[in-house]
Length: 139
Image (cartoon, rainbow, N blue to C red):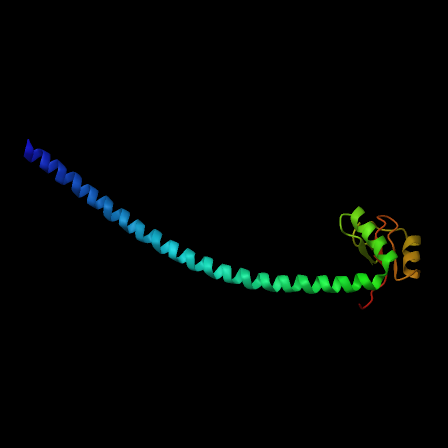
């Protein structure tokens, strides 16, 4: 009986050793994958920090430019802009594009088109009541 038992144990042990080898192989593959992921994470983190810094600088520069522009508008003009912006979900200004407003996209009748073309540089969209830039200009 002991011989049979030893034989069975040897057979089971051999099977376990084979499984152990397979597990160790997979373990090495996982370790390699983790090392590659760690390198990739490090690279992505560096890129994120770098790009984030550029974006922060851009945001800061744009905020400064915005503050200068707001200061140049005058209080009444800025209040009108701010009121429209709040009512219209943050989009207060549009551009007149041929026969329609660039925001509401409503095609205007010929008479309103002519009024906008002949009128001032900055007007109001007759449909959505946003500030509308009627002619191109340089800032």
